[in-house]
Length: 107
Image (tube, rainbow, N blue to C red; front, top):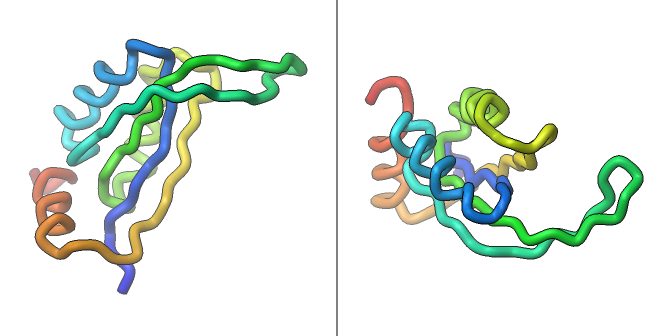
């Protein structure tokens, strides 16, 4: 059964993900953000790029995805920040309850 939960994938320059994570959790746009160091290989503006980045796994409500995207765009250093929203179809009920309690305008 679908939920109102989502995992959002975003990236940041090395060393900048924790500040973004704290902001999103503090503003209750995210219940939890996990950070991992990654290496991204892509093409940008016609140039081949091979860069270290931080991957942010953002746990939030699907209904907050637009607000969260707008906030990321406001503060993110990239011209076009990565943000992919993955709908959570199911999960452990106590965790999903906690996610709902920690996020949203009713907090």
